[in-house]
Amino acid sequence: MGVEHTQPEKGRKLVIDIGGGSTELVIGEDFEPLLAESRRMGCVSFAHIFFPDGEINRTNFRRARLAAAQKLETLAWQYRIQGWQYALGASGSIKAAHEVLVAMGEKDGLITLERLEMLSEQVLQFKNFSALSLPGLSEERQAVFVPGLAILCGVFDALAIRDLRLSDGALREGVLYEMEGRFRHQDIRSRTAKSLAEHYNIDRDQASRVLATTELLYAQWMAQNTKLVNPQLEALLKWAAMLHEVGLSINHSAMHRHSAYILQNTNLPGLIRNSSCCWRRWCASTVKPSSWKSCRA
Figure 1 (tube, one colour):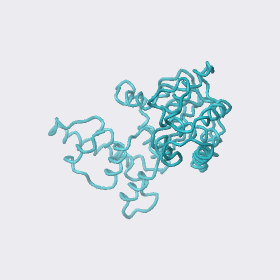
Figure 2: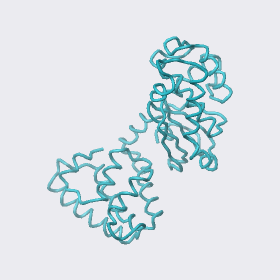
Figure 3: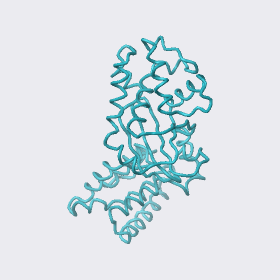
Figure 4: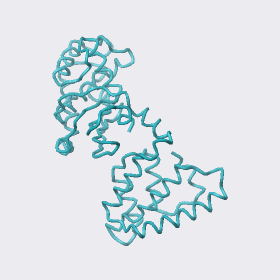
């Protein structure tokens, strides 16, 4: 969401975010996520697994790169079929690669497989993270640059990315837009709820009746608990009311548990972990208003 708001280009985008413990890959268009996946591979975790004691050699790097590509095997074909017009990187690892390439003379800062291969060869001239010295590489990225580079190479291999450029709009900006009320009309979470309702053929009339009753009860509770009022919780409660019947697609018996199971095992674009946990909890059981305080987003 942060990337979409900070990029002027219109069209379908692939956004890659390589973090310390995981890598997120999203294809979206006009604030609408089409595919969103996360894999447990990050520059910190890969440093421990493939580069013990910070040792750099061709074997370690090749193993890390191959492992990254293999973790994307199950989604690579789907992403390629979906396609994208622009590939953007939004993470410290990708920013570091961009800055090193620029410092090495690639003034456009564009990241290509050819340039990554060249950069990899430069990295392999060093024996340890502590000895790593590249133009444009900051000291704080020194210990995670090589595993981050290996992951980025693996992503390029798996998705056959032609070129990628840095986007400054990452999770930080996404959080800011989350907090900014003027973006509510473009709320990605509302589209997530609507998409789920359509996918599981929920009875919209019944969902509307449940929602109306929920709003009435919430209004009564709100009048008695003014200090606990939270628009975020109100929105989550409404979405839970809309989706409480998704479990009917499995069985009428214990529908609420089936609903919670489906939501627990479904990608929920736009919802952070705490919010999605609250969503599932409300669909799974009756939650007393006094417990809502623990679910504040």
